[in-house]
Length: 130
Image 1 (spheres, rainbow, N blue to C red):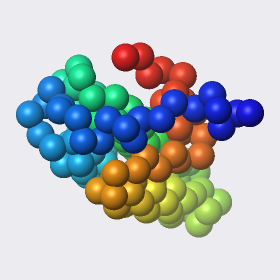
Image 2: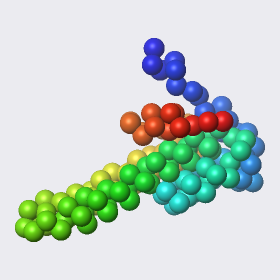
Image 3: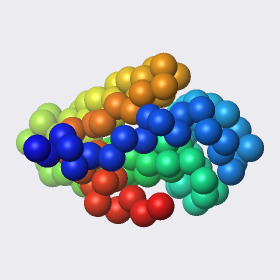
């Protein structure tokens, strides 16, 4: 039943994009440049739901990636001894997982499909308006 509530954005993959880019290339740029690429494409896109939704998901993924590096690695890494050993690498590990998800989204985008990242796609659905 929850699957029926999800919107299908894949039907817009061949439609015109207001960014004057091919929708697959716009998808690539959104994920490749993390939160900044996602933000720029999300703000520019007015017509294509495939591009706009993927840009929003890329934006959220990029924010989580930066927050993981800053909060986990830097701030928690400042705790003497325990923080250095346990937390200094954890933020970069989370960021690496975010990059793996971004690569999957890019590959799926070039095949004309939307990859829904668990948890992040629900946030994108919640804040997507078009």
